[in-house]
Length: 88
Image (tube, rainbow, N blue to C red; front, side, top):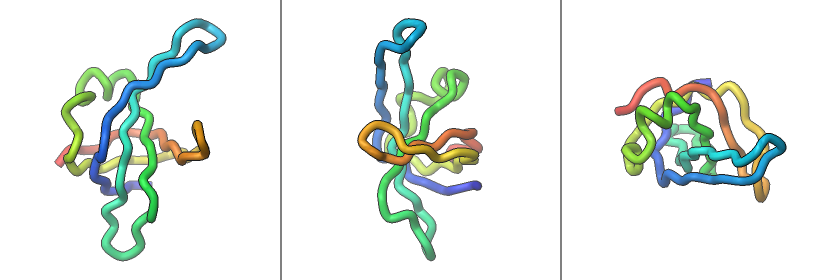
């Protein structure tokens, strides 16, 4: 599914996993669909490649995401995974 969103915030999360410390880079996103928008913000988990190229530069920008999976994360927030298609 492709979705056009505005990045509300960028944050780093870290926790102790089974194989040591895990660091994740997360975008909080607001759906910009004019007809049927998702009413809540949701999180997008950036890949390592996306993090190196874009993390820290996307707050307030519009991006297109190719989301292939949504799953509940900490506190029940929806977290998407996929590919950052374009930054606009």
